[in-house]
Amino acid sequence: MRQPTDSNFPVILAGGSGTRLWPLSRSLYPKQFLKLGNTESLLQSTVNRAVAACGGPLIIVCNEDHRFLTAEQVREIGHDASILLEPVARNTAPAIALAALHAIKIDKDATLTVLSADHVIEDIAQFTKHVDEAVNAAQDNALVTFGVVADRPETGYGYIKAKSDGISEIASFEEKPDAATAKTYVDSGEYYWNSGMFVFKARAYLDALRAHAPDILAACTNASENSTEDLDFIRVDADEFAKCESESVDYAVMEKTDNAIVVPFKAGWSDIGSWDAVHQISDKDSNGNATTGDAMLIDSENCYINASTRLVAGLGLENISIIETSDCILVTNNEHAQDAKKIAAMLKKAGRNEADTHTKCYRPWGSYQTINMGSRFQVKRITVKPGAKLSLQKHHHRAEHWVVVEGTAIVTCDDKEIMLTENQSTYLPLGATHRLDNPGKIPLELIEVQSGSYLGEDDIVRFDDVYGRSGTSN
Image (cartoon, rainbow, N blue to C red; front, side, top):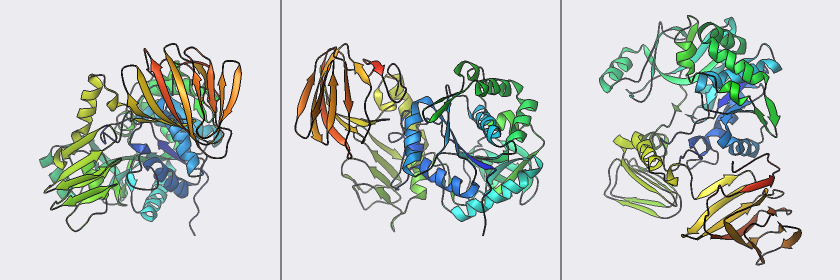
């Protein structure tokens, strides 16, 4: 029976904040956290298959904004991880460098299996076989990448040209082609899709950086050496890491080294970079339609509906995707589905929140959802996890009224502390120092009514926080 090796460290790159799956994916809740109709999120599925295939300690690299979401989703599936925080986005080469530097502190001979947090892989047994092939190929300090066996021309992927069939040295890396060029690539049988997944020894990667991108290695080494632990997270030195060039691992190392190898990969892979790609991997009816949530399609073909909060019905449609959330609806022809990010960019330019956040926002203590909002009031539904508590804080511009719907709350308001149960309420005047605590065994649900001249989330002065937050950060 196959046994994964303790020296093969799974490394999950979870720093993406893409909006190609807008409106479900937003900058503060990107696609790696989406479940897309499954019981596990993309991140959780990636972690589960990586841990099973590798066996070594799990390392996740993510950014500050997503740190609590990442930690919570990993805990939900029963795994422990070293979570390295990127102070600023610097692309994949520096992110992998941080993981390699961390791994060699644990095992100087560590091998890294580097995976993206937001890919779908359907054949787990075949995935594990390919990981084993890549680990074997990396033993002589080769830098190994997986080349996905292409079954159709794709203009949304980069390509890898192999020197020969099977596990091979790499002849070249090619940028995303036009349609005609993509067809010639696939017809030739010499090219693979560039998967963005890698296997190599940690020291081999660091040596390659030393040869081809020494500035990145120097900045990451300094940042790692001055790292600190903060709750579940490892914070690298922000000033040192900011000195890094923002470069992909392909550009920084793989395209320059003479020791790159490609392992053919055929395990039902997709980077699900568009709603059309989600449609392709979904279970479909006899008319090629796929739905998630409360959705109906009549006299329609090759359509996809994802309904989050209400019934969505389609009639007489063809090659259309409809994505519904509580505050946005996207309707797109699947040929243009990759351009959803353009709408998110337009919203961001206009200063609208729909590019960044959902009406439901997640915090380390639970979540809140905006139910209604006016010029001087806002109504929220707040859920606090058992044993969790909000920060001790005050507001300069708003007062709050809390009504408990379910569970038990301990409320601190200035020098008083009271306990509230179902249907009880309390008032927090403007400027009062307050805190909400769930001492119970079940989630605490309450309705919060805010009133005042300014209701922004940045009107928070924190005095104490069990999650180490300061200011108005997540």
